[in-house]
Image 1 (spheres, rainbow, N blue to C red):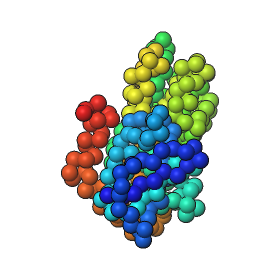
Image 2: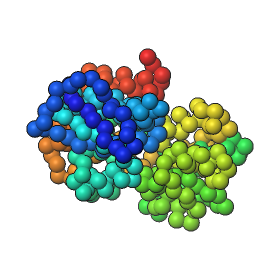
Image 3: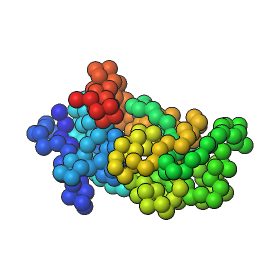
Image 4: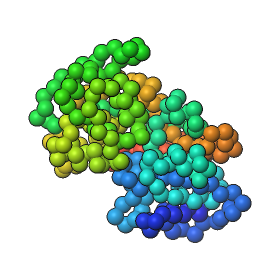
Length: 266
C-alpha cells in the first residue's frame, strides 16, 4: 500500500494514517482540491478528504505501488500547476474535453454525468432547446433574458455558457458551493452545474426550495466523462494511472465507491 501525504498551508490531515511502505524512487505528485464538491470529494470537519475521488485515488496509489504526495490547492490552480511541472496528476472531477486535451492528457473516464440547470421552485419556466450556430442543440437563450446565470469558474459549464450565451449575464464563482449560496440568497437566478453535485445540493435543507429546470443537451464542450489529468506527454504516468484504474473497475472497487457516495449504499 502507498504512503499518501497531504501537503497544504491549511494544515489538512493526512489522507491515511496507516503505515504504508514507501517507494522513494517512484513518487507521484497529485494535486487535489479541498473545496466541497460531493459526491466527488471534499475535506470534512475532521480534516479528512472523502468522496469518490478520495476512495479511488487511495486505491490507485495502492495498485500503482508508488508513493503518492497529495497537495491541496484551489480548483482553478490545478491545471496551471500541472503545466508548470509542480504536479504529475490532477484530480478534481475534471471533464474530458478536446480543448483541455490540447495542453494535458486524460486517463480513461471513471464517471459520466450530465449537466443541468437549477433554479427556485417558485420560478415556473419551460426551457426548450434551439440549434446553435455550430449545429448542436443548446438550451434556449431566451430563457435567460433579464436573468443572471451562475457557474463555477474554470469548469466546462463556464466554457459552455461563454461559448453559447455571449449575451447572457453570467457570474462565475471560485467554488460550486458559493454559486449555490448566491442562488439561495436570491442574488442570481439559475446555476448550471453537473448533475451529481446538483442532486447533492437539492437533498440539503438549503436546496429544499429549488429544483431542476432543464437538462442541457449532450455537447462536446461539456465533456466526455470525468478523468484524471496528467502532464502532456507523460506516457509513463498515464499508463500507470490507466492500468490501476482498469484494475479498480474490474474488481468492483470503483462501483462500490460510486454506490456508497451516490446511492448511499453501505
